[in-house]
Length: 231
Image 1 (cartoon, rainbow, N blue to C red):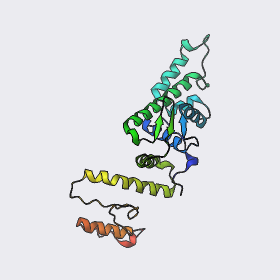
Image 2: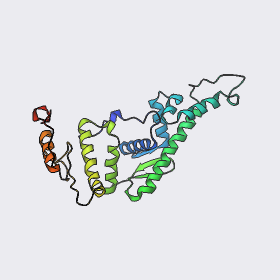
Image 3: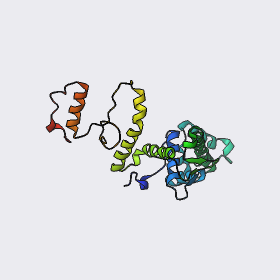
Image 4: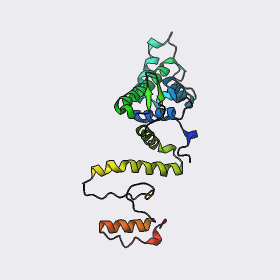
């Protein structure tokens, strides 16, 4: 069963949050045939996804004020020859350098993850590449599951449900520690009964009625089985 649509995989757009970039780089490493991805490969892919136009590609990694500052610098007399106007859409090294600098900062974030997660981190990050470890441990495999859960926009319909259920099950013990000791934690979602958590199972109407009984409340008189699509 395919959980994710690999053919739809692309890098983040329009200056996404750095951790979102780090997630994508890790995932590219996971699915690469070599089990390894370099900064240069990520930079090249970003340019490829933007028709090899550095000015367009830089919008996916840089803040607007950074781009305006760069354009301003290119238009200044320092970068002109005999009042020649620089074409902002030219494939020039200044925009490429900005892109490379941003990609490098994302790899620095991956280094921080490696430091923080220690042996539980399934990758080895060096100055300019990231490599998938061999023979992943249980904790490292768990990291991979959580990584896939961060990319739900790429999930298939079945993958969306399965990854969601896995994530909720993994969060169950942590959530229980956030609630009072005598609190009863019961899984109610669409995947109830598919994991090891205490669950309310059945059709939607029946599940709501059971939940009401547990909470000692009465459902509204407008709540009828015939109005529940999946009753």
